[in-house]
Image (cartoon, rainbow, N blue to C red; front, side):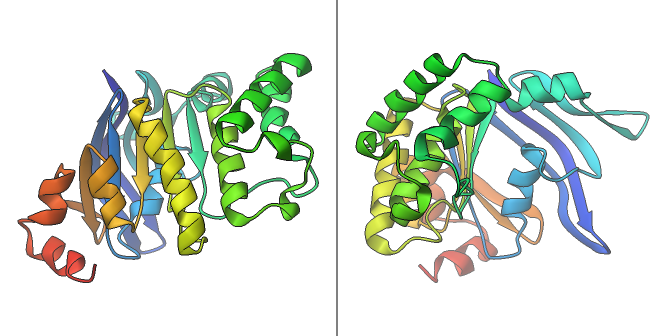
Length: 250
């Protein structure tokens, strides 16, 4: 089953075309790593898939539900009700955590559960506490984010993304704001999710991690998918000159 289907996605900022008719399918339980140089369109692809940017053309489905469709060349976006339901099917982890600084760690996780998904507070607290325990942060539930290390804040962000029991998780450079030691913390968490067969799309510059964890690696450059395939094949034996040139720097 395709958890994510993107067809012929185009996106421009002004006169610059950032995504040039990109198509991507992600299967249930698959881990896909997206690599490529800065400005290649990786993060924009994720932002379009998660409605943070509106596409100029193309279609997007999540778990079979139409997020973006096209009729007679006109792009149609899901209505407010459908959009809210579809957004509940995915989680997004940002590179800079994006936690609410004035909320406790627990409330950062429960806020959306209570006010968007209408889950009773007690149940939401139980979900949050279970996820914090899974992340090794059971003793941090009452703290504010500023009291946590960067690695701990990112683990809270992952717990928040998991709280709604999503069909797919998107990670946008989840370790780029962290030093090497804290990076290891986050990669360990993502590795564990991969072992549980959580469907994930991960934009990353951690090549060894991509080779180890991803089922498939996609190399993007200048708004197109240049090459994709099994992680070990792409990273150890790329076929395209642009892929080889990029990986030579690692």
